[in-house]
Image (cartoon, rainbow, N blue to C red; front, side, top):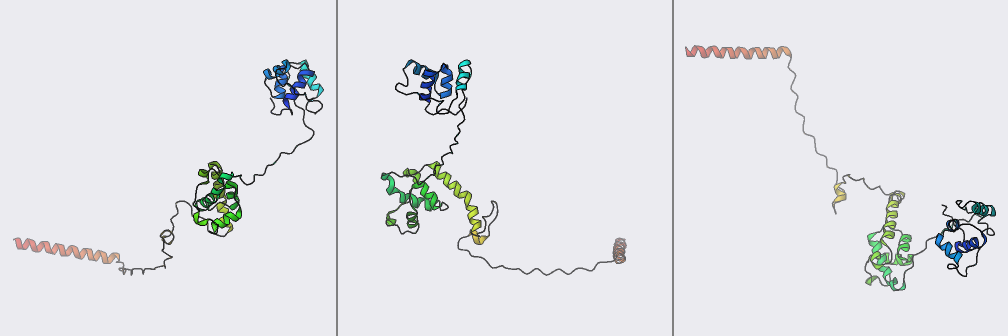
Amino acid sequence: MSNRKPLMPKATAVWLVENTSLSFDQIAEFCGLHHLEVKGIADGDVAQGIKGMDPIASGQLSREEIKRGEGDPDYRLKLAESKVEIPPVKTKRGPRYTPVSRRQDRPNAVMWLLRNHPELKDSQIIRLVGTTKPTIAAIRDRTHWNAQNLTPQDPVTLGLCSQIDLDAEVAKAAKRAPQDRQGAGAPAEPKAGTLLPTSETVPGLGPQPDVSFPEPPAEPEEPEESEEAAASRVFARLQELGTGEKKDDEEER
């Protein structure tokens, strides 16, 4: 079943009921109506006073297609292809309309957005709360005529925008932030798990000078002993031990 339906479906159904022998189901499916509604049109209970519209004259249906449907009750009529291609209408979303009763709350909402979401562009704030760029600049610079009495308030709580719209704008700004930072020449944010230097994590602690500690003096290396000297030293030690044992035996006797 095609999603394309004829223009003025009830008027087209009235014409088909009056001028063809198509079944109610065929007319209902072609016009996108219920078959009981088509039966009501035939009985005069539905669409009273509606003038039938000829789908053949409007180029939505051909005579051959109607004859094919009249000859086969199971056949489903097909809407003729339009010879004129109608381009889709692109609607540009403008500033959000704000009711008069809530317009006095817009400066408070703008201040809340500037304080809690500074990554948002002015155009995004305008879409959310329906304000103007001069108003945003005045609130940001604290030059607004009522700056002393402004208090940050969530625009969602005030009913100026929905939470879905706010989250969508914040997500767009978060995706755009790395590109803006690289374009401005600022260093990229460190990846998660990277340790920052103490000068950046401790407030008030500036860059520290590099302190170099002197290396401890190297211990003097002992000269390597040759194999012959080592053997002589061991043999002399054994002789000393043997002489000591003999003296102990003589003293015991």
